[in-house]
Amino acid sequence: MNDRTFDRPVFVKRGEFMVEEIECLADAFEFLQEWPKNRRGPIFDTAFRACQRAYDGQVPISVAREAFAGFARSAKILEDVSAAMPWMTAPKTGRGGVTA
Image (cartoon, rainbow, N blue to C red; front, top):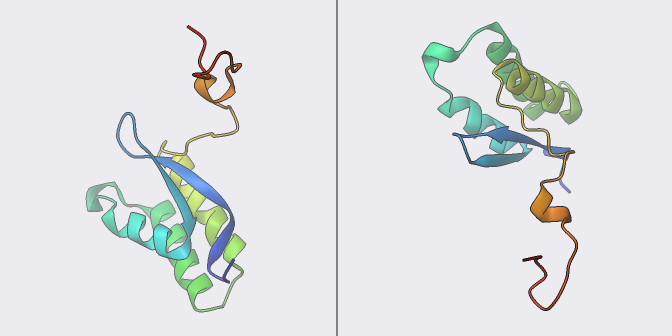
């Protein structure tokens, strides 16, 4: 793990059925730069500044991760992956591994 990788990724919704994994500063910057300008605000600005400061070594990478996660939460795009999807936890039976 390099010094610009988050200790654990942040998962964000991109569209109705797509989830994106943000695992480092580069991913966070790319996501933030693509965020629509008309949806940016003070929380977006805080997350972006925190990522810049972490990149410059002024704050720990964990500060940038938490700021980005806070932005995602406020934008209602933070995905909770702690609740495993049923297909990930279904009992394996037979050769196919999926119950019929």
